Image (cartoon, rainbow, N blue to C red; front, top):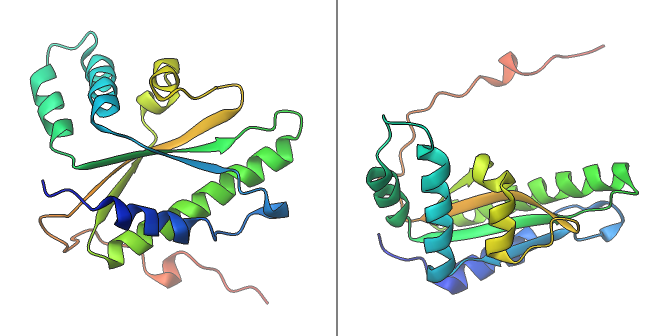
Length: 166
């Protein structure tokens, strides 16, 4: 539950902005979400996750989300008249996210990148004041100090995900 100092997130954004991006478009924008906005986003997520479901407790969803100490949203600039550029810009944002997440992880801060239903809901754009004709939400990010930094997830070995060609 301990909040991460805002300066640490700004340091991570500094590292993120050095991600490779074709034609130096720097297509990313980080929305640092405050308490009032978090409450509104939580209400939207609770609605989306519990709509038409009796097996999901709104209180449990809300409680889990309220325990997350840090939130931000990343968007990518849209260029509908240049679909290749738009694809490259989205990829650049993914590179920026990788830089940011690795930076925070080395500082002992865990990050979760979600692209769930809430990131595609027009109401999220309204809550954030984002013009959906100019920007696309790349992801909603939750961050904080993890209770346990050990990972018990197995990853494929390099030989399982690579092929040597002559």
